[in-house]
Length: 348
Image (cartoon, rainbow, N blue to C red):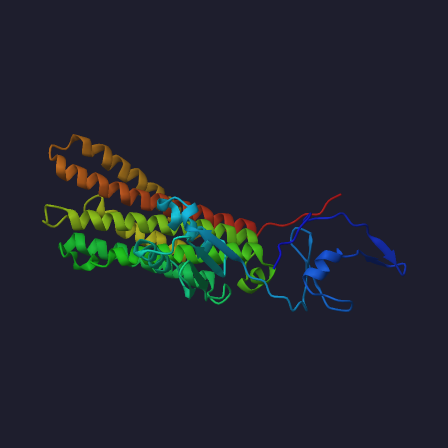
């Protein structure tokens, strides 16, 4: 389908008809693009900002986003970035072309991309063209449920890291890379969903989110993903530690992991309907813990055991960053609460 051409906005004059009704004409091109005819119904919504939104209620025209990529035009090290960008754009079809055909490295890259996404698979293939289709309906996976899944993955992974540190048994975290990959895949899925909500009035309504709130949730998604990165880093530190003697989890920095777990639980439970006292409590605790860990890291410079000091310092840094990202999350939750409870005041 051809892309719409010309301006995206026009100035139209209000007209008074019948002495009491105001009308405004619709652009002919917009009417034709949506397959509307006279007497078809359109929905007029009054937005919180005071703007009106016009939705073609009876349109029978379907649209989908398609992205075409040509492998030889993209630097080899950036192909996966372009594939992810196409996925995040909300494309239903990603069509990949190659003048010389696809070798084993190309196919391995495509398999990696498919493993990163959710609900995407190869549906058509020729010698020099491959089509990947997204089979997941954007409205079929509630964003809040996907967010909660990210939370559970990050939280349980850190609990298992804590157990591995406490017992010296690294079997607790043998699959930590798989869990990290799942967190990354969920991040991509939710960001794709949020992008579609921002573009579609229908999806905005079905998701029960305002566009402002969807954008704020996108920040929480990226915060969870960064937390997952630091949990993975902690897990790798535990796995690669040369000295396998048990670490005292009741001493810094690991003694603050339970505090972080509690704060994150409070924040996650207050994303949708915030209890401000719990959000405040979590934020203040996280701020206190970050200061404690900073002092601990400064003290590491005075240690004579350099290897242990480096291990403890890197572990402390990751736990401190977990606290920092959770603190950012508390601020986002507060932002959502204030926006939901703000009032639009009309004045002349």
